[in-house]
Image (cartoon, rainbow, N blue to C red; front, top):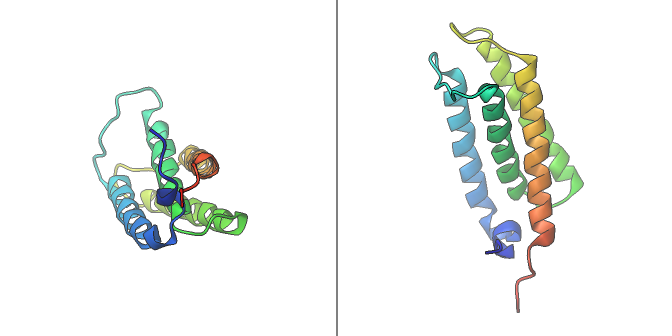
Length: 129
């Protein structure tokens, strides 16, 4: 079933996308700052968690704004800074460490999320009427 175009492009839904983004940012921070994070039990599972979390964050962030390169670049830069902030804070937490490889996984997730949302917007059927 295709995603209805209005979910991807309707400006009246942007406040809802922003509320969801805020909730997701809080959830990611909570998970990132836990002293005993859940173990995904997969090889490189931590990197997969970073990639997936930031792909979702980026996808939702892109739905918060009008489609376009300036907004996409702004979302990418903001989320990359958020990922850097998380890694910096983790260097100060017991049992946690900041890693460049985590930030790289965040960046790859951002690219994946933004690209996926852009593709979905492009492929979404036009609303009739």
